[in-house]
Image (cartoon, rainbow, N blue to C red):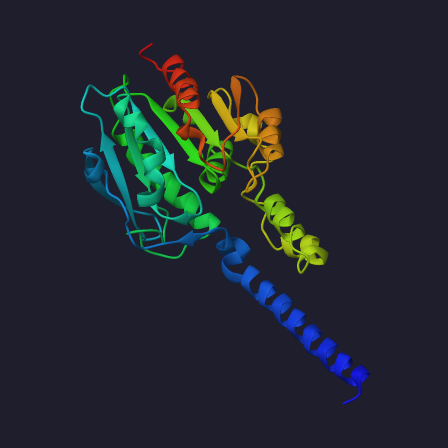
Length: 294
């Protein structure tokens, strides 16, 4: 075969491969209104609070659309200072994420860690709209446990859980009646924006960053809505070394939010904030300062 013919054949084969991947990407983005690609659930539990000698209850809740959600209610071995509603990132389940916040139990706070639909023991298939329904279901359970007005409620979201927390709290009014403070660790304000950014990182999808990202609905973005979170105090945590959700996303959240707000700039890897005693102390001071029992 002539070398030029061989080159043309190879080029044609490469072109078909690229075309295949483009069609695959487009097909995947159309699953669950495109938002399903934000979630990578795992059904297996790799850890339980019992292994850390923490008292806990399995909580099962039913959503308005008939899914069954599972969560853990972790309890301190002292008088409770309040409850932290913990919303984890996009992969695995509560068994691999809750370990980063068990220090709160040791400091006297209860934790309610929720698995979105499709994660762990929760039924269903995850997408953004469904996860927000799940978060509301978990929130209603949390405030039902705090009928005593002396019980403090905080919401802590990490990574995708932080973005979902921002969406939930910026699109729902009246949360200040129950919520003392919100902590956003490694979050981002726009699902469409982060999709465009990630598509631009790969040569194969770089030319398609605009058309493909526009397949992601902006309905759930907190961009241009973050001022609605006030008057609930907001702590934004973001690392300058975060290569998963770059630092500028944290800056954008803080800039758009209204007072009262704080910005804790860290230097850890993605969602590794609480591996540092100093960052734990800062977060603990935030919890204590905005406690109704102060």
